[in-house]
Length: 223
Image 1: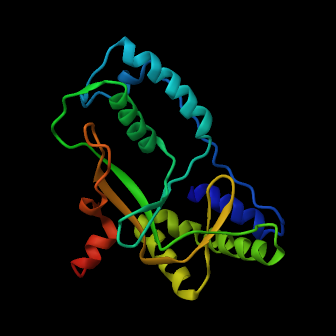
Image 2 (image 1 turned 45 degrees about the vertical axis):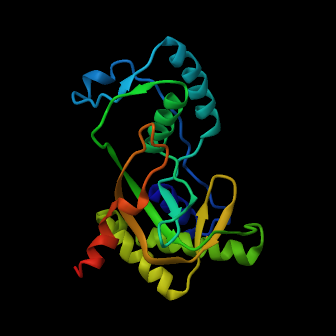
Image 3 (image 1 turned 90 degrees about the vertical axis):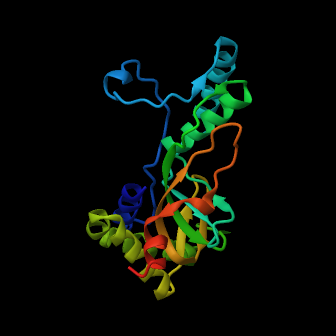
């Protein structure tokens, strides 16, 4: 998504009045994927009576999740996801839960993890991007991201620092969910890169309180 943000900011920075998003997403089936990935994790088993309705769900998911979003917006106390990311990890998690609901038998006892990119916030407020003043502020936000893109792309720590500086400056953040812009003011630790175990049936909820986070956990240790 940083790439999409950067492109939007670049357009804004050269005098364009529109912000374009390059965040289309789709699901693909790759027949020879096993030749690429040698290591596999066995989760369980299912039969044809489970797989047939799963394919219908897959098609519906593909049609209703047409955008890419790397960030999940979460409350500062980790108690609630305000807006979810949309990426390959989210599809895998949703697919596992759907297979479980359809009767798949999961046998894996060992935890299986995934990563999350989190934006900490106390809420998202919808804004009218057609309003000239709001539009100007949206452009201002993405232009700042664009001007710092090389620094941001070096590592995630730099991404966090830019986020922190923006929040302290009083500049509103803008979050696009594929249909509408939302204004938000991130709260400490602003942006984070985290690792948590996925929910494998019979579990259906991710326990965010037990996840490891790059920024939050290091700050708590005083690094």
